[in-house]
Image 1 (cartoon, rainbow over the protein chains, first blue to last red):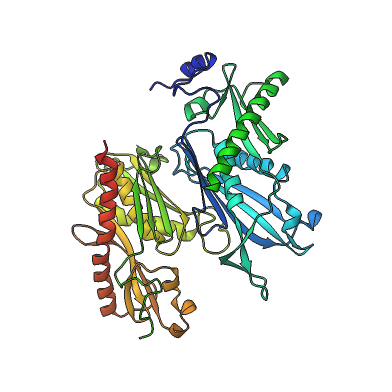
Image 2 (cartoon, chains in turn red, purple):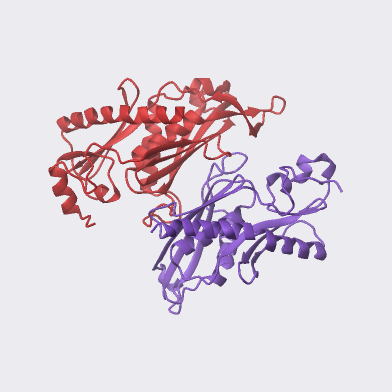
Length: 264
Length: 241
């Protein structure tokens, strides 16, 4: 298949794509599996089309930050593994991985999806910290949405480990049935502008052909919790409005997939 | 005679349940998923491709380069910081040495074949799972090979010579109070299928020469179970086409 930029742009203007999808369709299959790693307190593997991402949640007890002494914390890290694409090389995370981690972090943090107060054990002394590691298994495009979904699925699946009451140390081999206190479910949808047309869930070839993109994290009732614009070209306010409409509609589709697949 | 029965009830040369699959990463030239018990290795092969920096290039043949990485959430304790570790670098080196004898890269001068192995969860035996997965991925990628390499750990747990030690067996005196102070030996080996030669041999713990040799022989025998599953995974991959 000739997947050059001109072809993708020409097709997009006509509302078409190389793989015959509609511009606003996600690829199939969408597969969300949880508890894929027994060593993580929560874990998930999410596949959309040929893109596969894993997320693992680890919990630890730390001293709260001075300015939020009655709260726990969250940290999100992303690694673009060289196993997942010939584009990636071994080494510390580059800017693409850092942006991915920070955009997903903001989507969850700013929605106050995790009740950080409920993570506090002893104010000023001890609180739970939630660390989510996102790693790519096969990057065939649209890492933002797939990684965001994997992070939410892993959070929902996570259970606190047992804490030894005498020593205060964590017994990672044994888990309680207590889940992470989640108040909302922010889901990220990234809308791409390709030759003037709005597109969802791009392949790698399509990702190389866009003018601008906007990642929009929104919760169950349509409140937006984080956004990130990318790409070389500017956007008008009208375009931003259209992108949000599309993202909100598509996020409810992804949220339904998430909740439906986690139930089974 | 303290450790009479294995914790999980296996016979001495019985391996943990395995799940082996080829072609799990579409972007890679070859790939495999290798699960043994609660240890899981995913391998991907990229290349042959041009090798940089250029001074590493060999005009006579291509270079095989393995990478080994435990994911941050794959340890049984707290989160592991991502990035290279001395342990990971050493394992990558012995993996490369374990696979090199069967791989022929003379047709690819100045090139590199990269093997990346990632572990989403672990319960001992990770370097062996990594080598068994890598061998399938290299074969699936069509890299010229004269044989398969399969790997497993053998060792002496208390008084018993066993194959495929899990974490509890490696730390037997934590889990079986009667075993306090008894030496455990852990011997990861990799075997070329047809010649039965060893391409990986490491050992830690304490063992006599006689016990070591019987452990190696037990390993050569037990490893056949892995080879059969590697072969099956490759057949399933290619018979469809």
